[in-house]
Length: 266
Image (tube, rainbow, N blue to C red; front, side):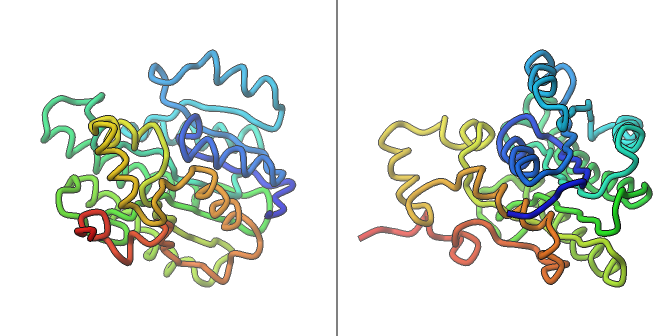
């Protein structure tokens, strides 16, 4: 476990799924953590109760479609804590959740790129332009095995493009920060047991289809959010610098064998 005592971390989209597990892991390592939520979509009363129970935890609204919201979020973290040491860009939309923002497929494509790629870029730029509380700084971007590592036929074009953009952004930023105290990484999860994955994939399957689908995954199971969060917590710590610039395939083998789920079993 990384020792993050005294560090200030900002986790976008930290209320549920992988983001929530990341928040818990970073808090467990001693960091002060601010996570973001989407106002009007996520339960403010429950978020407030969670933060009230832990003085080292706070939450701010963030809309990655809005540059004013992005600036305000970053500025408020600096005002509260004096700086930001760790940025985890987790917030994103997928092929299922983007439908909650727009009905037209063309508009959905635009939003996918605007939020996943453009929002991550704006957060990285804003983070680098603001002070830290210590010397070492970390940017940890969440991409995906689809687009970030491998290509899957039938996968949403705009979703894959946006995740590929995040992987490229990670490498580009790492190249530019190679002589600074800023470390940059991307983590590319595979099929992970989150509400987003349930909504996009599993909920459309019958019980027998679900069993068959899961058996075709690497190791015959979904990845758990805590497994991804453990990787993120390590990257947030002092021992991860040697991985600067890495785009990490965290798909349990799906990235090196993307046809696994469609292979014929004998």
